[in-house]
Image 1 (cartoon, rainbow, N blue to C red):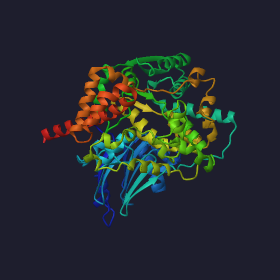
Image 2 (image 1 turned 180 degrees about the vertical axis):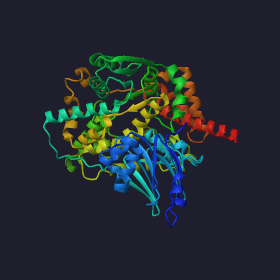
Image 3 (image 1 turned 90 degrees about the vertical axis):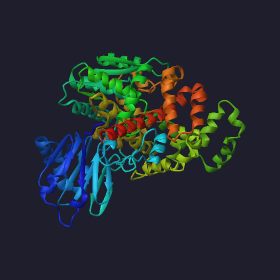
Image 4 (image 1 turned 180 degrees about the horizontal axis):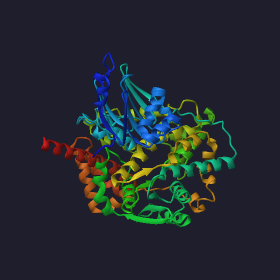
Length: 600
């Protein structure tokens, strides 16, 4: 695979007792969508950063965004990331300050990976698998993290020598060492109060402006349309901004409980879209599973990546140069069902300790109440509520429920810390700079795990593979800032998810879409595989590959494919999927290594 931003920097020369001359800087090879240099600085970047600073904005307009960032760096140094908006990844080398600065945007819309040989060299790329000198050693802990999260959260990558810059962070490397900097502090204003009408008008204006910004300079723009509130809102705003029927692209599945095409058609009719539909089939999965797995720069288990690819491919073949995604609305405005569930647990925690002491002995594993229909779920809630946040967000984690020792070989488990993912979660949970309520705390947590490390890599990979640009109007900085000062009770009102979002768009969106349950582009992989012999053969072959590598236990694969999948195809199909995608990615690496060896 090819990267879009890359470079290698000789830190030994840069950190000499005297700054290197400008001729050395000319030799610094950085490659990106935009590169700027002068006698003291060189900057390369991806994306579309915007600048509030007037001088930087002028420089960007005249010479490109890299020149604009150089202006910001001169004024603000390591605080420069706080002065830049939009989606971007960049690297800057400053010969006079003898420093290198890496930075990515708030949500890691654009990514940046690096390998740092302390004091000697630095290699960077937007893809982990393209970092120069990354080596062939895989990180066992990252493989376990993948099985736990279904992706590998930053800063780790699958490669032992490569790290990924976390969202909203910069990395400053100078003679004193390397220092990670958060440039977007998580500060919510939970005391801010605004009347509903003015908040609604501001909210609508921001979304409309964000869509306007995303389509500027594009010949033909389409939009993902799942029929949910986010994608439908983007489609409607695209109509209002362009004055033309929006080009909307939807994916369907001929599987009960998974297909949302009826809602997508409803939104398309409501907004006068030119609606393009494609129904993904089991044959499509067979044709593209390996390619999709191997296109990502490390193992990635979000199954929506495949239908997202077919949707983006349809838009590209239709002549679109860019497609808009609705990602972000749930995580900015409280739209995920787990927010309401965790609120139930918090109500239980609010009970006096004496009352809880009376209840909890009746909720253990051996309690007779767990045998009574209706009470089993209630006792389960009590048991799970005893876990602190954020630990209880993973109380139902798939690999932990199955027991790592039952899934993975003893030899592999000896190389990992099964408690590390929870430690990572706790560190992320602690990043809020002041005490905040439960809802905002969960949103900030999801900005990292759900958006930066899962949903955005899914869409970025799908659109990049299809050869089309993507925009995220729901992740505009102005909308995130608005969310952070919105009354948290308006995000989750009682147990009504994203109450403000829906009420603010009432009359703009069809009522049926406002009241529908969320689904998205969920893939019916388990049910399909359970009855499709070819899909099952591919899965079994993949899982046996992990057995041969000494990662997964042979008896677990036998039980998973022989019994568990038949009993609960939806639940166990997810485990099959993440294991299969791991093996398919590893096979791509094997093929690349063999090709490189043959050429040497």
